[in-house]
Structure formats: structure tokens, C-alpha cells
Image (tube, rainbow, N blue to C red; front, side):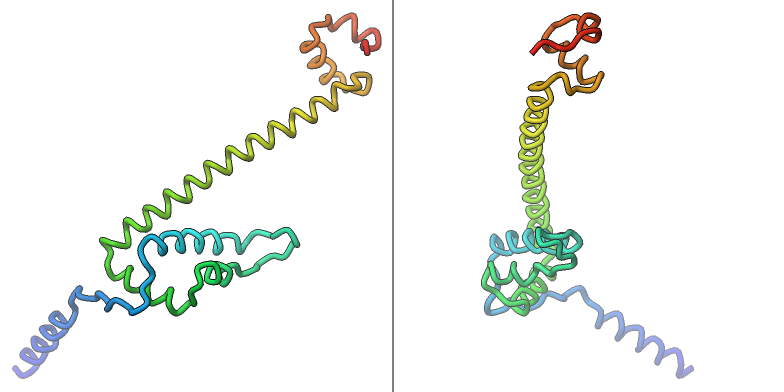
Length: 162
């Protein structure tokens, strides 16, 4: 008989103590939303770059402290601001969506730049190939002839004209 009220009291206290009111107080040095979005974007890039080698072939370099230096903050200030924004999901979710859109924009810009660089490289390789057509392989000679509109039979028997 005594066990039922004790169990009921424990369950009641657990249910009332567990509330969703876990919003942290706003820190004194809160990072503004727009700066926090840019900071989160750079932190995503810094943490994903950890697995790649840099120009000195150093692997596993931690770039996060460079992001903190860029924004002139320390890790404690970031953690406090991040905890505050995380506790307010309705504010944090649009910030993360904006970070994702910024990253997608940067990715598309870099893909365009890479495409242009690759096309320039391929064009320069093609120019080198066709400056001296006598050194071309058979399949490259056919491409050259198609561009020059020369019959393939006559050229494959002879040397290519200079």
C-alpha cells in the first residue's frame, strides 16, 4: 500500500521536473546572427578540410583556430553563443539553412571556376598536340584531320602537311 503512493510521487516529480524549458540565458557577449551564420559556414569548411592535405602536404591540420582568429573570438564565446542559439530551435534552424545555401553557392562558384580552368587546360593541350601533328597517335591524327577537313586515307598513308 505504501509503495503505490511513493511510486506515484516519484513518477509525478519526474514528469513535472522534465519540461522543455531548456532555453539558456543570453550570454553577455552573444555573437550576432549574421556573424554566427558566416562563422558556422567557415567552421564547417574548416572541419571538413581536416581530412585533406594542404599545399605543404600536411594532413590532419586543425583549421578551427584560424576561424576563431578570423572572427576575433575564442572557443568559449562560440560555445556559449552556440548553446544559446541551439536552445532556440526556431532561430537556429533558419541559420543552418542559410549556412547550407551559402555552402551550395560557393560549391557552384568553384565548379564553374574549375570548369573554366579545365577547358583552358584542355585547349592548351589540344594546341600543343596539333602544333606538331607528325608526333600524334593514330586516334589523335583522326581528330586533327576532322578539324582540318583533310581526308583520312590520304594522310594516314603520307605524312601530315605542316
